[in-house]
Amino acid sequence: MAQDAGWGGGVYGGAPYGGSPYGGPPGWGGWVPPPKPGVIPLAPLKLGDVLNGAFSTMGRYWKQLFGIAGALYGGAALVMAAAVAVAYSAVAHHMTELASLGYGEDPTSADVVPLVIAGGVLVLLGIVVMSVVSGLMYAVVPAVLQEAVLGRPVAFGTVWRRAWARVAPVIGALVLTALIVVVPMVLILVAFVGVIISVVAMDDGGGSGGSVTAITLGVIGALATGPVATWLWIKFCLAPAVVVFEGQRPVAALRRSAQLVRGDWWRIFGITLLAGLMASTAGYVIQMPFSLLGIFPGMIGTASLDDDPSAAAVVIALSGYLVATLLGQLVSQIISTTFPQLVTGLLYVDRRMRTEDLGPVLAQAAGTPATPPPPFEGGIPQE
Image 1: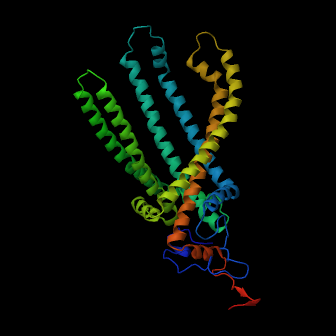
Image 2: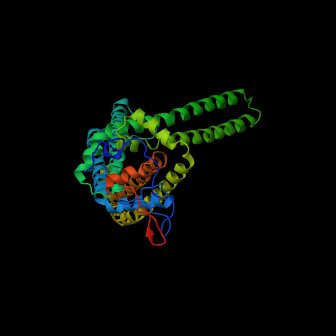
Image 3: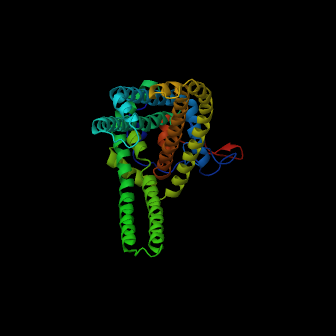
């Protein structure tokens, strides 16, 4: 069993190897194919290799990937449902008071403040829960991929232990990436908003020239922030994989990601965008049957409501539709999270095989021959 130290040390090695023997001079029958102990060939990957590797990993390790993802997202949904139920029981009286106000009556602070506090607590709890769940999923996928590339089985408990051990630095890397991406956007937007306000203030009100200029500047500002955010996002997109594979801390993982992406930004951007579009399309297709199934119990439930139903009665009547919709969103979320992360992890492996010649190291770790068989010329083996 290989060490669990990650792909930055141990049997995987951190130093580049010499020239790879695979894909070298053609022997008898053409080019010598690279070894493929797992889901990908251990050589620089093409687009088809990346996508096939992601699908193969989902097929071979579906129990680990989908089992943990289902448990995490399902658990998060139950936690939030319980929190909403507790919050509703605490502020139900205040909601009833607000709903019973007549036209022109102003709500009292005694009714509004508890609702605001309850809503704020639910939002904060949702952010914390989803941060932990996202961090675990961003750690689970590379943990499975470590063994999938080498063609080795991995137990459910092993994946969970590896992911839990790296969840804190993975969350740190995700938060740092979000801040790095968001801050330039906010600064640019603030600058353009300031310009727009100045233009509108200088407008004498006699025409629409100032408004047109303000709209134009706003559109330019929106267009300017998009490329900056996209460039930074791709630059640091390999950071979670670096954390899990190499055991790096968040800041070091961002630097490492930028190093690996350098010189191949457009290719990584294109493959990542394609994977995201494929996952989004699959998620939408998956949600449709659940939504259609939920329409019928929703129609039956709402037909039994009286003229002035309470909020609880409406929720109960729509419970079938809500359950079906939540199940569809749960399955869609699992697919849309797992597949893009598998592609990103394989892009990390690809970049290391291209820049550091990691293929022979992985072949050695997988127990496959480190060198290809000798070529044949005229039926006589050449030593």
